Length: 368
Ligand SMILES: *Cc1c(COP(=O)(O)O)cnc(C)c1O
Image 1 (cartoon, rainbow, N blue to C red):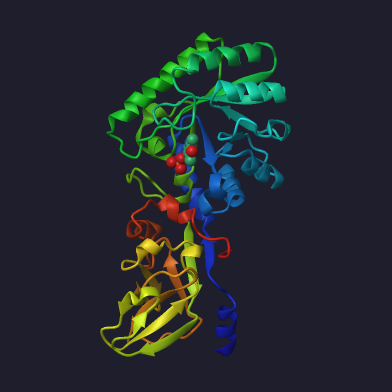
Image 2: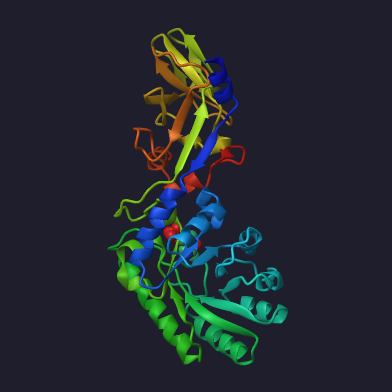
């Protein structure tokens, strides 16, 4: 018993990634995609570990990798991932030389980017990025014809190759939203403008997870899917497999009398004698402070309320009259199979989306 406790106690908060779940999600999404499937592994694979998610996705139906920054792309290359790889969000003066030298495709969202790219390197593989309605990344439709003409000239001069046209839908999580048809129409127009400029990009990609799951007309020749790989369906239409489990061992327990108050601001007090358990993770580890009053964990066979405020490094859990040994492992969230809270529930308690929870787990939480 002592040895078991000691072994458990040596393990702090831990994030486990279920790559079998990622594999199953990838297969489901690949089956829906008539063209290629790009595994989007930005933000460390949505907090699930970029290289593990990338390897798994490539083994189960994805043939491309996608990230935002060149730094993320280079990290994948350094991990010996050699699949076609796109980086789509970079400042004008990004290190294009290193990117092209590492066979990283680059999205070009403006004339300024095209200009900087052609000045710094020859031989880039480019995906022209059109804003299809979000007023965010990508060239505005007013700039698009000029961008396509300039890219056509650069291609004919042998400076680069335009291999793709990309857009992104802002409301695909609501399949009925009229903005989806409008975005698709802008994209179709953008592809025609590119053709009229003499470009023949074989890759045309608009859909992310939600559109891939709900909107066949958006799928074109490739889908860029991130959230879905890790079990998040923004459209709420499809049962995917969540891939993360966050656990933490009980550091200590204490019996407190009626009236005992807990944590900063004494925001919760015991209205009866009760036993409290301390868990060593808090908002620095990704438990949103805004979940106070709602959050639960799974501990010793049932759900327990988190009481008082979420501190930076710790939370307190109400055990009632149950006894739990220090070292007992609590499950903060998991796939929900045992009754433990899910990431979706934590997102609801924090009034946010699952993406923010899974990408927000702090660096000091051990990964396995
Ligand atoms: C993050 C991102 C994706 C992936 O979106 P999911 O909804 O997570 O599949 C695709 N394209 C762009 C431009 C993105 O930023």
